[in-house]
Amino acid sequence: MPRQLVSSGSPFEGEIGFSRAVRTGNRIEVSGTAPIRDGKTAGIDDLYEQTRTCLDIIVKAVEQAGGKPSDIIRTRIFLTDISRWKEAAKAHGEIFGDIRPASSFIGSSALINSEWLVEIEASAQIED
Image (cartoon, rainbow, N blue to C red; front, side):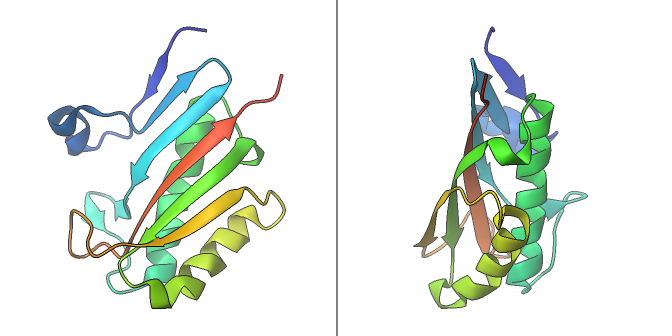
């Protein structure tokens, strides 16, 4: 299978030079995903809502690349306030409670947009 690029339509994709996701063979890598809905930050000051938005975008990108949520094997969750990790964990658990990918919660001093409380990356492996 040739390299497949998945776009979310983000204006940053062309400016920065990245894809929402890239599939090579059975592997899908999803870029750092911010809580953007309809061009605006979703859930201002609501970490749960922002996390849910990021995860919904990630699942959609994996599906566009030919995978499914259960193919996701790794998530990396970057939080600007690590003390609020349980709010992000609640959203993560709702989607991945049965899938249980390897996961990291990482404290970050800042993200690109000061409204963003979270940014998430993911990796998926499609089984033959």
